[in-house]
Image (tube, helix red, strand yellow):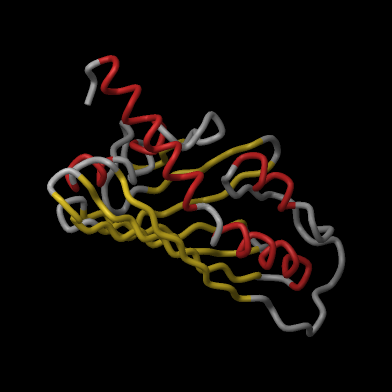
Length: 183
């Protein structure tokens, strides 16, 4: 895979995709590993905010590119152990929901693009007031081949800057729900 192949897709969609394999042998170069976090506040109680961070619940705010295809469970449901894929063009990433505790305000995902990279997304929510929830998100990404190192670095940089974008998208989602009475 050519360096920089994944980054345009990720920046355009906000989701990871895959499917291409490296055409050259892996060198002995060190593999990149990055961790980045961001925080923001959701204008909703913990119970409502938590529902926005399951793979199905994210459809409201994560944009048209976020179309998880559930492998388990069927029909689709936000639960711990859910397995799904996200497709964009020829790229596909596999996701596993490893922690889903809405009452406790914790969600975690492991996602990978075979032979390219693996990452975790850890979401922690805490009550600020009865009507506001603090959200802390941490991405940890690791290249699985040297050709993905630049992409992992660039994605890591973007990960740390996602707070304002996520906050606005969630606020827009909640506002639209209030307008239609579907909270």
